[in-house]
Amino acid sequence: MTNTLGITIKRERRQLKLRHFGRDIEDIIAEQTADFGVSPVELRSGSRRRKVNRVRAAIAKRCTEEIGMTAAEIARHVGVNTSAITKALVR
Image (cartoon, rainbow, N blue to C red; front, side):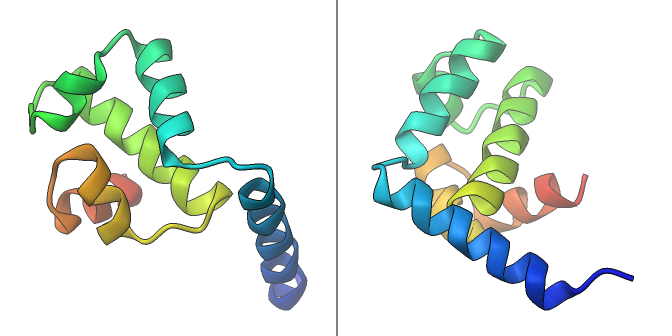
């Protein structure tokens, strides 16, 4: 049986640590677009290409887990609406 409070505390500590070291969404976007071979301009263009959607999903997952961002905050940075980020996180 997992202690959800313990997991929550560990996640919050990790998020605070990453924020303390200046880790932000722009760093994650740069890493993920380079890994997938997609330009940041294309990412923010609202493109519906499968490859671009995969990059957005990877960014959304990392931003929620690593720095605790909301779907709305992520959506503003990647050029889509909040529901697109929520759906990407569910996948």
